[in-house]
Image (cartoon, rainbow, N blue to C red; front, side, top):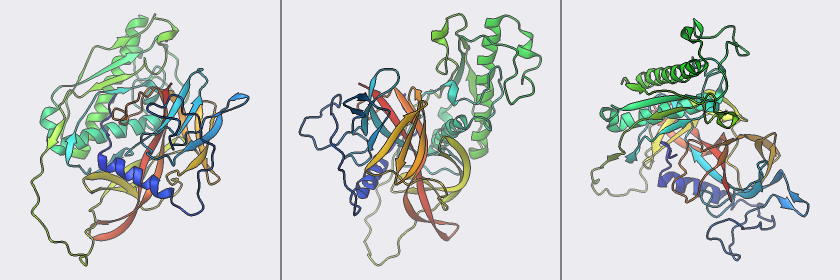
Length: 410
């Protein structure tokens, strides 16, 4: 699945440069023994890249090194390991803007909206419930903010008139719908329950349909708040996997598919007039706009005050106070998988990347020539400081991105 938050070449070069600069810090070195390069396409034995393998003479381990100091952080695997499913994987690095609400900055070049396949563990619905509860599902809020931001960027790039065929389709897995009230709730949020339906398959279709429609309503509401534009989202026939057995049970089958059905926008920029360069002229600071940013640390998300800004035709977001946001990882760090959750320890500080999930995160994975099977994250990280201007006042922001570690089956 392609993502609407595709990294531009400027962003890719920025990430590569930041990680490359870390490798030149005094006192750092890559002394880890070079790992096995098996399964890394195009790699030869004399390659200089260091890919740790989570294995010793006794077999595969659940701990090992991750090499964030690879020659190309966006292309080289960080490690090779084996998961509980018995398969070995390359560990890959991905990054994207955190979700944010408020004024958006747009970039030159292309803007596109692709299909969103939202699995159940990224949706804000408890069992047997149909009204979104973002306060109870942090991962769902992160995903929702990303989708909203993508639509806002498309609209701000001039694409609203093309958003005339958006569809949404809900799916419910093979588990029986019941009248049970989930923990943390006092009653079901549909009365009468299931609109009076008693046939299990019809009840399952009710869950799929109402969840999709209510999710669409929230999306319409938030996009209108940020742009003044009202989306029209058409509900498609829901899908029920009831009766198909346990193999059709899980987040990928209790999902929502949101299809914008729009072309990629291209924006042509006029050729700028030649300008003389004055090395003594003051720096022209980017103009930053206040926004609310969803920051995710150790698997928990919270909304913080921040800013969005555009620099060298690329959108960024940042916060003034870094708080608990970790710095971007550098060189070799310690990794660990425990209870299906991946964590990283750098300079004595451990950060949880997140639960290892099936599927593809909502970031671009199309341009690097590999397939993602599982992923962990996001974790919000600090990529450095940038001086900007907001309301004629100079401020210094900590530029942040969400990172993921993705798993490519060998």
